[in-house]
View (cartoon, rainbow, N blue to C red):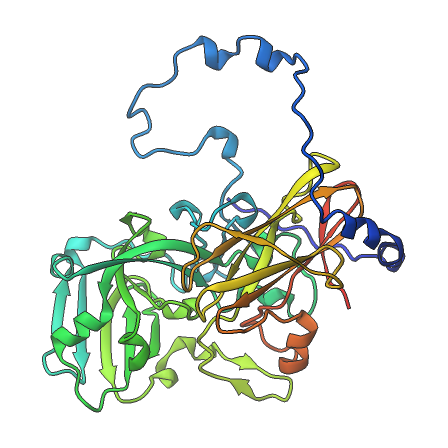
Length: 429
C-alpha cells in the first residue's frame, strides 16, 4: 500500500513565541499524573444492547490458515514514498512505528530495503559457500546448516539512511517516514563463527565479503573480528521462517551495525586479507562532511530514540486528561540505560519508564504518563546507552558533521502538539 506522506508544516513564529512564553508552564505541570477519572456507565447502546458479534456464530478454526489481523487494523501497514527512489525494485518501505507497542516488530510490518527487488528462492536449491583464505572451502545446504548449534537473539536492524531526510530540517510529517527504517525481531540461526571454524580460517585472514543471491548481488565487507564476535546466519525471525523480503531462506545478522551489512538471501562468504570496498555497490555508504571529506567504516548505529505516540500519525484524539507518551530507544553500543522526555522542547527533562525486556542491541520501550491540560507541547526524547553515549540534538549533530550526509542521523526529534491534539514535525533552536 502506498501513501504519500504529508509535507511538514512550519511552526509559525507567533505560535512558537506564544508557546514558549505561556504554555510551557502548563505543559511542565502536566508531567505529574493526576488522579484517574472513574469510569462512568452512560448506558450506551453498544454495551447495553446485543450486537451482531454477540448474536451470530463466527468463523470456525482454520478459516484463516495463517491468521490475519482484524479488518479494523487494515491501516496498520508498511508504506513507501513514491518519489523517494526511481525504482520500486531499489527502494524502501517504512515500519508503522506509531501503530505498534512493545519492542518486537511483527514480521509483516518490518521495513524493507531492496537493491534489486525481492529474490524468490527455493530453499532446497539454495547454497551457502565459504571460501577464500580458508583451509577447506565448503558449500552448505540448508539441511547442513540446521545441524549446527542454534541460538536465539533479539536485535534491532536500522538502515543507515533512517532519518536521512531530516538532516536539512523537518521534512516528513510522521514517525513512520522519519524513523520507520528500523525494526526489532527475534532471530534464530547459527553462529557465523561456527561456520568459519568448520572451514578453518588462515592466519592472514582479516575480512569477509558477504554476498546475496538477489539480482543486485549485494555485497558488503565485514571485519573478521566482528564476524567472530556476534554475527549470526539466520533462517527464522520471530519463530517462523524469514519472509522473502527479509532474505528467505538465509540472511546475515550483524548486531548493532548498519542495516546494509545484514546481507539478505546470503549465498557466499569470501574470506580475505583486506576490505572489498572498491568492488562494492555499497561503497556509497559514507558520511559526507561539510569540508568535503567523508567518514568511512561508520558501521555502529548510534544511540537513538523517537516518541511514537503522540506523533503526526498518532495525534491525541481523546482530548484533555490522562495521556500516555510512548516511544522506542535503541543503540548499537548495547543496552539503553535511560530515556528522558521533554514537554517543552528540551528545557526540562523527566526520566521515562522503560518497560519490558532490556536486551543488548535491541529496542527498548519507554513510557511517560501525564495528565494533559490542553497546553501546546514540544515533545522530545533523549536516550542514553550503557556505554555512556547521549543522543545529541540535531544542531549538535550538524555542528559536528554538517548537512551533506544522509546517513547516521540520530538527532533528537521534536513533535509539536497543538491544543486540538494534532501533531507536527518541527525543529526548535
